[in-house]
Image 1 (tube, rainbow, N blue to C red):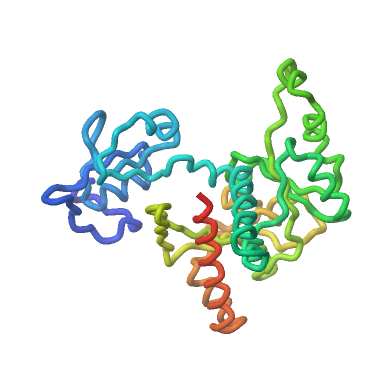
Image 2: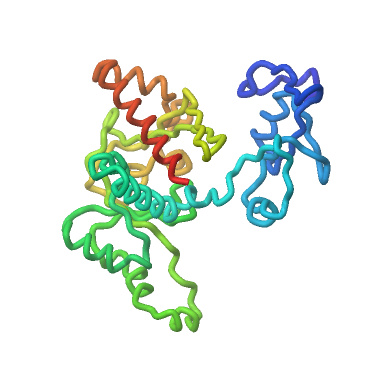
Length: 307
């Protein structure tokens, strides 16, 4: 960045140079986006190729192919933990949540385990199709949501009430291993299916969710830092169960909402966490809201503790 160029607002004030001993922090980045701008904005020195580094913002490909064969000095840091996909893949995250809940129940009892009930009833399809059908029959008339395990931005998500809407996963569940090997067709994509929360808390008649940032610097011992700010993402259309196919009602992904015909880019569909907190305090009082945000903090800690 030249001296005459205006620094992007998200970089804030130019930071003092950070050093390790008497030298500047050396970094590599696999990305050429905001991440790179922020690292440079800290006064750190970018290195290329085989040059030594202190911090590396790597991609998942590097973790998969290189990490296990790479020697790192004790002071070096990267932005991923090994086996990070155990929390980032939806099916594996659910597997670990269930495993953690069972462990807590076994070691501390059912009362303590009940604090882990912050996620809905969930199954992986097609592998758990038959288990899901049993649960489906116990809750006839309920609404369910399907999500591909490895996609983002709301891609592939849909809602349903009838088993006939997921026949592809039923057919796949009945195939033997040999049939799957000999089948020329692409296997059905792995999804998770969850019981849909039909009565969510609404603001202005619209659904919202929270995007909160937690920096984990160590798992043994557990060290996690909760960023004070974050934001709430809102749907563009008022909530209703009359149309379960309308993603502008049921999803909060910005990538989905900004394609709505009546989307206003000036207003957007986000609130800062502080805006949300102030709104909730005005509605419910500071004590009640404080308890809820404390409960959220504990949930983040439990989630982090999974690994």
